Structures are given as structure tokens and as C-alpha cells.
Image (cartoon, rainbow, N blue to C red; front, side, top):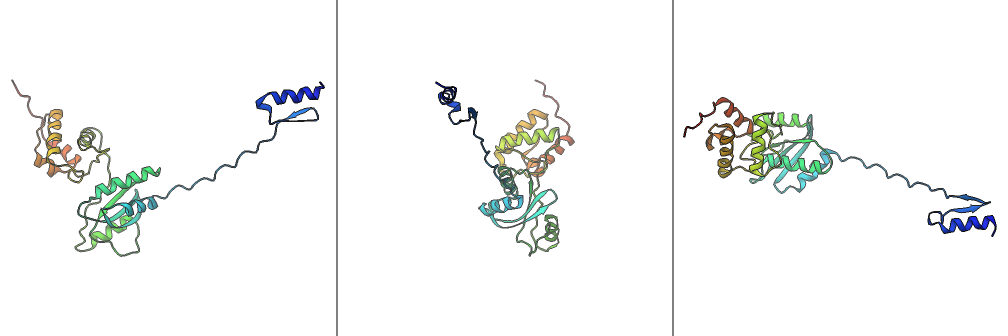
Length: 225
């Protein structure tokens, strides 16, 4: 067997070399051309994601989306069963699913102003100036500050089964009722030794309001057996 035949036999016997060729007594491995890299996909625009989410939301009757200094702002006309906070959190979930971390701000109105629309801040100012507009406070997430606010927000989120509660989120709009209020206030009293009533909770309305009540009220004296 010639040297060339032995070389061919060696190449044929090794699975990893079967695609090689022998030319002029030299083993040559075929050149593999790398596949072209896929074209980068454009990141979705926050406004486009929000518009699709609003169109799919059953409680949104009409809406206007506008850029905001903090991300995306939305004016919405809602049905009687929906709240701005609920829409805000649904929009945030849609943005996160699209890989975006923008915080949407939602302003519920009775009717939308006439186009063209400017920035969200301009829309809010325009609505606020309109008579009988029914303008409500903008639902914008604000993280609780460290200390009692963060603790209260975590406790309230646990009782309501929510992933997060903002410092300015309204207890009723979060889905809180009298049963949740009693259980939550019992936990607060055990943690802070400060008695609070259900009426006070509904009046304070927010985690920040409850934290201020706690700060303004001295802790109850320990009971003597």
C-alpha cells in the first residue's frame, strides 16, 4: 500500500476527518464559511407597547399616549369597574414583558382633549384647565422610602397578593376592603404597638399616609398582666 493510499485510509477511518480531502498527498480540511449573523431586531418602542396593551384592556374605553419625562404617560377614559392604578400596573407588566423598564403614568379623565397631543405633562395641564373635566390625580408609581414606608408597603402587598405597592397608591384602588383592613391593621399594631382604626386607614389612604399616622402617634404603653 502506497503512502497516499495509507493516508486516504487514515482519513476514511476517522469520523471527524471523513469530510476532509487529500490533494497531492496533503490532507486539506474544507473551509467552513460561518453562517451570517442574524440582523439585530429593533427594540420595541415603549409607546407602541403601551398602545397595544391599552387596545387589549377591556376597561379602557379611550386613551391617548404621550411621551413623558419619566417614560410614558397615558390619558384614559375608563369604565366604572377599572382604576388608573390597575391600568398602570397592567401597562408596566406589558412593558417588562417586552424588555422595557419604563414606568407608565396614568391620568383618568371623563373625555380626552382634542388632538394633536403634546407631551404627557402638557396634556395634564390642558386637562386641569378644562372646566368640569373630572380630572383626577395622576397615578404614578413612587417607591416607598426606607423604614416604615417600605415595611408597610411590603406588608400590604402581602395581604393583597400584589407584587408591589407604591407609597402613594390608594388602599381602595389596590383592592383593599374592610376584611383586608382589619387583618392589615392587626399586623401593624403588633409590629409598631400603635393602634389604628379602619376609618383612619381609609382616610389616610396610602402607605405614606399610614406611615405619617404612625410617626405622629406615640406607641401604646405595654399592657401589664
